[in-house]
Structure formats: C-alpha cells, structure tokens
Image (cartoon, rainbow, N blue to C red):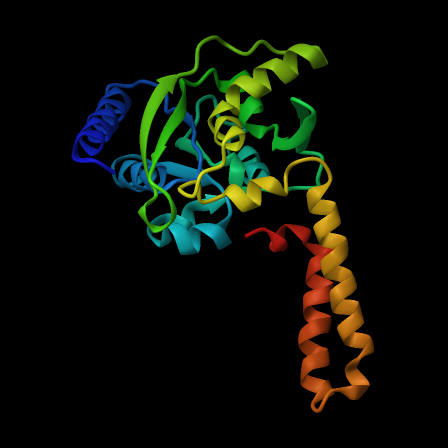
Length: 250
C-alpha cells in the first residue's frame, strides 16, 4: 500500500471512529479480501467494536491479529437481531464464504450465478445502518502484486418486502466489491480461488471429487503399510466433509 493510500485510510478510520463516538450508528462495510482491506479492518477493530464476517481458517493465514473475531453470517444475525441498533460495526468479506444452507442465495452474474449470504441484506433492512463498499485497485503481479482501497457510501435504503427481481438488484449492488474483483481476477486478490467455488456448481463438484478421493484411499487401505492410523485420519476427514462442507474452503 502506498503512503498516500495509507494516509487516506487512516483519515477514513478516524472519521468513522469520530462519528461513532458522537453517537452515529455503527456501519456495515463490505470488502474484498486484499492486504489493504485486511489492514484497514485490523486498524478499525482497534478503535471501535467490530465483528468480522469471514472464514476463520483463511483469516488465520491472512490476518492473524483479528481472525478470532471472524464469525459466520448466521452467527452475527443471531447475535444482533434482538438489538435496536448494531452493537458493533460489521465488516463482511463475502468472497471468503461458501455455504450450502438456506442463508445463501444465488444471483445471476452475466451467464453465471453466484451464491452470497443474505444476512448483509437483512442487516441493512432491519437496522438502516450506514453502509460502505470497498473499491480496490491492483498493481503489479505475482510477488509484486499490491492493492489500494477506498471506501464509498452505499446509496439508498433497502426497503422491506422486495420482490425477487428487485432483491437481486440490491444484492448485486451490495456485493459489487467482490463481483468487480471477479471480472478481472488479480494476483493481489487473496480469495480469488475461493470465490471461484461460489460460481455455478463448482463447489458441489469439488466436494464430490474430494469425497471420492477419500473413499478410494479408504478402500485401498489393505495395501498400505500402516493402514490403521491412516484409516483413522481419513475417516475423520470424510466425516468432517460430510458434516461441514465449508471446511473445504481455503
């Protein structure tokens, strides 16, 4: 991140913290997974209460300083739904999450479709919180890949009781930070490979392949030199994949 970009983010953080201390509602912030956005989230979490919607497994590698704050969309909703205002700022990384439960909703993006959590939309509908979208610019490739981040206010209030077509339009607007990254995937987008699993049936296909690979190894156990310990490890992994397929992400 350039010195100028870092200065601008610090000013934005100072502005958000100042507004909160003056009584403004805490915001919802949608970000793509990049080093710049993770740095922003880490800095903001030091100065105000923050919950992160994201993958603890991925954030443990990308941002260990606040991976313990990572929660699932449903966990955040269960925690806040009885409040009148958001009790903390919510920073969401939609590109990190792959789900198969009813809280994930598929919307069309061009000729493909992509699954996103609807919880962020529910937060906007219920709390009318100020929302910000993170726009990323990339430069360099490979090890020299870098990015800058700017925040833009999300215009409009999401009305309740939207018909499907209008709901999809609002959802696409809200998820624009990660959709824009997907249009031209860059080395600096950390969740590039994970996001690909959200598109069409890629996740289900990958899950079936992983299950078949594990089952094939289990059937080959009689020919392995130490089948008992290996059996146990494979059986545990097979059970985990069947019970919690989101463990495959990352």
